[in-house]
Length: 256
Image 1: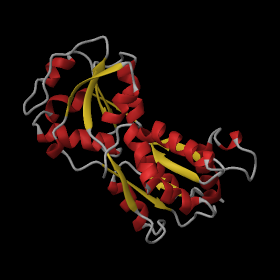
Image 2: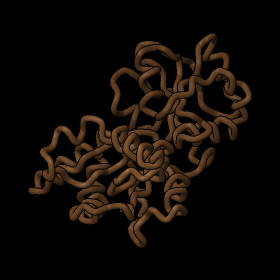
Image 3: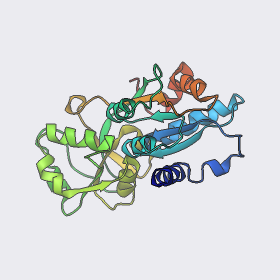
Image 4: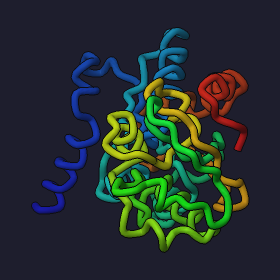
């Protein structure tokens, strides 16, 4: 009974109002996607619907939260993670349909500030980031579990400055929540993906972290074994096609 209740709660959390926007039986496959993919996946879903298909239902959150929901039994069709580790986790649980996993896109990691608050800081080894923060905090997705946060912690560690900021981090559930803190001026700095910074007019990029300072940022996509939607595999292939990749490129995503 408890398991059934947990699965029902997970499903409600995932779908929110998304399913309510489509008539019963008239919606496309359910895609669980990393928060940083919001604009690109909405554009891809629109392009798919323009071809005469029911528009896919999209649910965005931190990859860690999505992976846990999938493992709890959420009946999703596709999973798009912001790193390979959470896809590995779902695959180890036997929940990825064999032969459907593929890397869809890549990204860069950047340090951002509020657009109206200049910061004199150059990203590099030993950079005085703690001094730049002052009494403020560094907005980051949870560095212990969420991909953007894990990449950020790795980069700061590689540059030798993680000990300076570890106690000054404002940990949030996903990268878009970190972006929002900087947009509102609640924190003077934040670590997000380059595509997140590009999607906002309220932040400016201080600099990009060196590619070698963290693991390559790759977004794997896969169809899930729980999928029952007839369009799930076709939509996955559409995203991986030249058309799908061109949509991603418009939003700043690179080839994986």
